[in-house]
Amino acid sequence: MRASMLSRGDNKLVLALPPKSSYYGSPDGEAASIWSASTMEGPRVTRLYQSLLLVAGFMATFQTMGTIQTFGIFQEYYTSEKSNIVDGPGQYSMTSLVGTIGGGLTWSGSIFVSVLLSSGCDLNLMCLAGAALMSSGFILASFATKLWQLFLTQAILFGFGASILYYPITSLTPMFFDRHRGLAMGIAMAGSGAGGLVFAPATQSLIDRFGAPVTLRILGVWNFVVCIPIAFVIRRHPAYNPVRPSLELATKGTFVLQLLAAFLQAAGNIIPLYYLTTYSVEVLGLSASTASVLLAVNNAVNCLARVSLGLLADYVGRQNTMIACVILSGLSPLALWFNATSASFVAFIVLYGIFSGGYSALLPTTIAEIYGHEHYSSANAAIYSMRGLGAIFGAPIAGAMLGNHPGTTKRLASLAQVKTRFNLIAGFDAILLLIAGVCVVFVRFYDARYKRQWQWNA
Image (tube, rainbow, N blue to C red):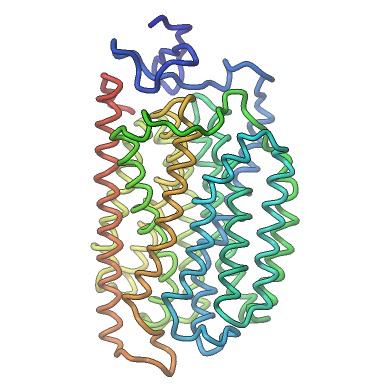
């Protein structure tokens, strides 16, 4: 197969093949084709636009994932005796499902949003509509008095809206960067941790002062005001291909294993975020405000780690960095959350914050590298949809293990029994993440096998 050009990017020599080349490379072992922000037809990508895109990506994840990662504060309120949800107290599993559906739809909705993205509809108006749906979900949830009403508003309506805003920015952003793609996505995805850092104490303070209904209305108005400029920054990349079903893609080992890894990592990743505040209050005896500070610390560390890991990945390899992050995040619950004291739990919060963000920050860049521009949009939509399904099921299963809220009149367990149940949750979380780690290791080897070349810094 004849190569169209040789270029130096991502700190290594890249053989760029014709646009229609197979993702798996030729029988001679040529490298897969990848898109380049500087070589595709269309308007030249300026540093100013790249900077604006990073700010927009950061703020998009700040608003979407930041609020999702702090749902545990709402969960603690909804399941307590102070709750405005009449059937909420004691219902950990069902209440956590509200948050996980909202978070899950943010990812799994990508399968539908990608079709809209491929249809040629106005991208800016589409993102603006997503912001409006998110805000509507918050505001309408403020009038809810039963769990089923939260499912319709804070879960489904918010989740679909978040997906419409979140997916276009996170899927298109890596296409506008070449050499520092890992760092760029680290900065954009760091908004998730920064959002949690801000929203955790702010949400707890607002709930303590005004209650959940007023807090939700404030979040709804704030969200729409912030998201208006975000919606008008993103634009299509000339190399973005419409989503198409591909039997070649669906039957390859890398893709199947990456789907499984996405499902398991999302299921495990969300559990500590949802039950961090509960463990702090019910087991360690801390106040709700102190628990919200610990959640903020976790998100602050996560924010800094995403940028640092993105920069590191550009030099030591994005798949290598992702593998290390997933495996270490899986080991941390066993080492530090199991029978945790206050000191070990704080250590868990910090170390888990460091490692848990690596997968999310590096996933779009590794999808781009493994599948190339021809299959990027299809692989990206499918993998994020699988992440959404995993996110939906992880926390509710953990909630079923925990049982009824220890602080309600329906208490069925002693403190010792509650600690035992949290140990089961920590073990369950570790198993999910470690199996996901094994999957991404095999993705690394299968990718090298399909391309018929091994690179240590892949």
